[in-house]
Length: 88
Image (cartoon, rainbow, N blue to C red; front, side, top):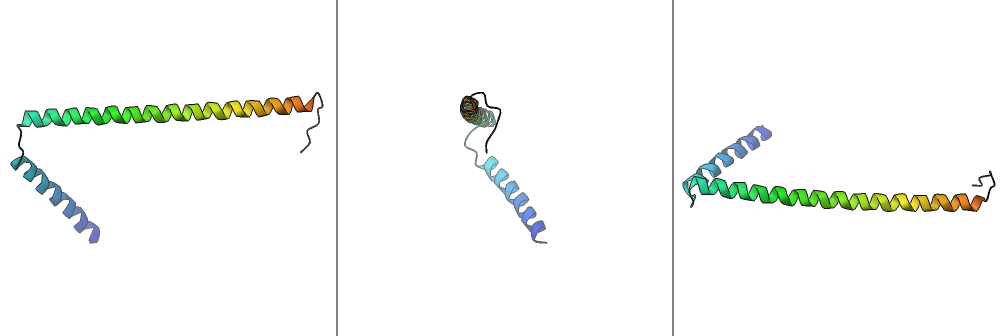
C-alpha cells in the first residue's frame, strides 16, 4: 500500500502543479512554448558538448594507453636481442 500511496501522491502533486502553473503563468502560451523550446535546445546543446568532451577524453586516454603498450612491447622485443627464450 505504501507504493500505491506514493504513486498517487506523485500524480496528484503533478496535476496540482500543472494547474497552478497554468493559472499563475505570467506569459502567453506561445511565449511559454518558445521559452521551453529554447531551454530544451540549450540543454541538448550542452549535453552534446559534454558527451563530445567525454568521448574525446576517452579517445585520448585510449590512444595514450595504446602507445604505452606499444612502447613496452618494443622494449621487450629489443631486450630479447634475438633470443627466443622468454624468462618470467
